[in-house]
Image (cartoon, rainbow, N blue to C red; front, side, top):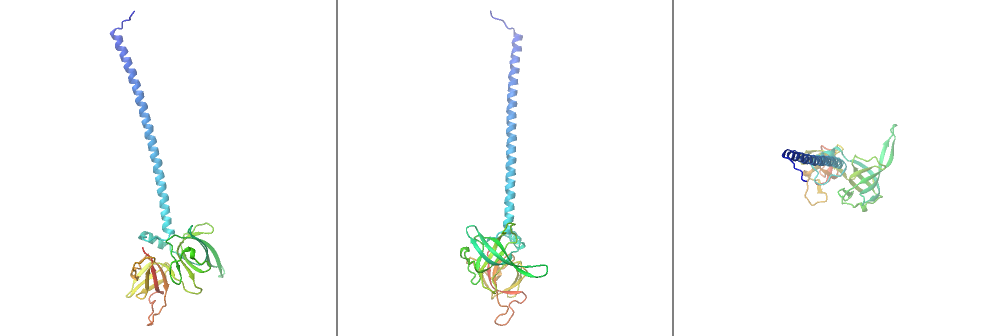
Length: 276
């Protein structure tokens, strides 16, 4: 027997079904919204973590660059800022002997002969081992000819002058960057000098420039100027603040008897000028 459903009951049933469907759609929409929120939150967390990583990498790179400016031998094309920082960290000259060379690793083991004065004023010689870090740009020159010398060809029994960075590691032995090396230095003879120009004064016949140690050098038309490892033509007019030189000291008097070092501490007979 069929049961008859009146119109009011049908309307109430339809309303109940509609409310159920709306509630289901609302729950689905809420679930989708929550899922989307979770995705957004996760995405923001990933972006934040990525930003922190980039910031840390940038800080590390900046730290490495600042160390490079202080320790490394400036490459050709050093800009003015780098040159100023390099001059402030003026190189230190040391004398001694090279004991061994690790060309592949970029290390030269150097015994530095230094004098120590005690409280009573007594001087004694002390030998300190230093590891010199070198690159393909590190000038290694023969004292007599100023020709380049390969690290593997260094005579470990000869006297050596090196100019190193003031920045040294705390390790034993300490390590530092070699900025210039002069090998085969004769006994009791003046050796070529590595110079970083801090000041330049023009004269009627040349220039007077001051090096990192405050020594004033005079260069004139008789000074022989040569480039380092290039065929570029250079003159003493290329000596500027920040210029790096290898120079040899000449006689203070010329054949005519005029004082070649007039107004300066010494006369530069030859200057080898580095580019940059």
